[in-house]
Image (tube, rainbow, N blue to C red; front, side, top):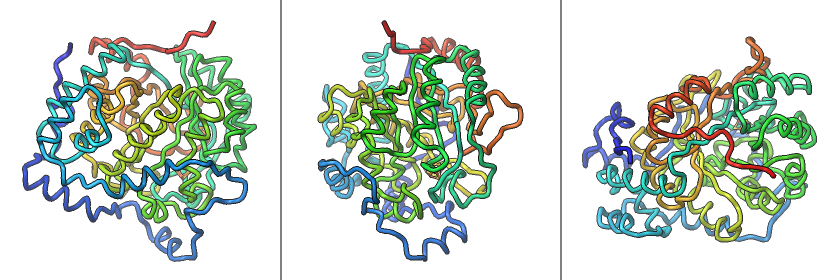
Amino acid sequence: MTKTNTSSITEPVASTSAADRTTQTQKADAFFNDSIYNEEAAAFSNQQLTDHMAYADGMEVLDSTLLEEVLQARNSYDYAAYSEADVRQALSHQQRSPKDFAALLSPAALPLLEDIARQAQQERQRYFGNSVTFFTPLYIANYCENYCIYCGFNSHNRIHRARLNREQLIREMEAIAQTGMQEILILTGESRKMSDVYYIGEACKLARQYFKVVGVEIYPVNSDEYAYLHQCGVDYVTVFQETYNSDKYAQLHLAGAKRVFPYRFYAQERALRGGMRGVGLAALLGLDDFRKDAFATGLHAYLLQKKYPHGEFAFSCPRLRPIINNDKIKPLDVHARQLLQVVCAYRLFLPFASITVSSRECARVRDNLMLICANKISAGVNTGIGGHSHKQELGDEQFAIDDNRSLEEIYAAMERLKLQPVMAEYVYV
Ligand code: SF4
């Protein structure tokens, strides 16, 4: 087994002395990332806004209690109450409980990060061997009706908008398929009007002709619409909850259907009921207290897995990145050391879950996370519209990426790390 070298991820990070850890804990209590606010967002949020906990017309309401369970657990999660002994106990268990997961995410776990990483690497080996699954995202439209103040696609941001037509979709998919990629993740901004479910379904039918695995990361829809997309060839659905702090969620999501917190929360459950093979979950680390959000994300997946044991579960671990027209965002509010802690905690809690590290992270961080605890990586990424086949993108990109390597380059990097690149995990007979 490869040596677990956490310093290769965490070298540029400031030390975490006992005093630092106390300060981090105190800061987290009063956490607010005000770098994502601008004057327009502040003025808008002073207006009368809709109730973010109330469903809008047409939104399916499930008979489920998962939301209450996750929010209650998140709100009562006091990570400062965990000790090094709790962390060691969590590490000694073969299967980790939510309490163990809470300990692994606590500040008390940081001094044991080497031990945690070593065990996470063993679990990664046990469930995934040395394989690394590749995929590429394809942004097919960037129209969006939501006002998420941290995102470059938000409806108030004056950017170039575009939506690929059938010919452009084919050109993009051909360009991606020619690189050897066999899994694709189709993304849109969240506009039912400009990218309706049938438009997305047609794009997925096309994708099915070029790729063995098709995922979508689109606005949440009802279970019958997920069933339709599944018929069009979609295998899995990823939805980021962004933050599980419902009050903070209301402050960050000022308009549009995304403002409805419970409808977004239940997207994965509707997708599984619609027949999807798998679902992906994530909090955008850095929006709110990352320990509580990571805890809620893991618990959300854990409870879903108990309820839908046939489903496949996946985590993404995005951190905030600078966006177009807002260069003040502080992406490093969650440092590399904390990111490693979160990804290792996911691996130890739900060792069978797939974990993706996005191209928002630099090559060094991504490669080392793959070696230790993650198992899925995007390559040849372009977050603009039409960027795979056009030198000049048709629409602006969603966020800045840090790892611009081509598929070939990442493939070679994985082989140098003695990892085995896998282009498709499924064989269809
Ligand atoms: S995060 Fe998604 S929903 Fe929000 S503005 Fe960006 S693209 Fe739209």
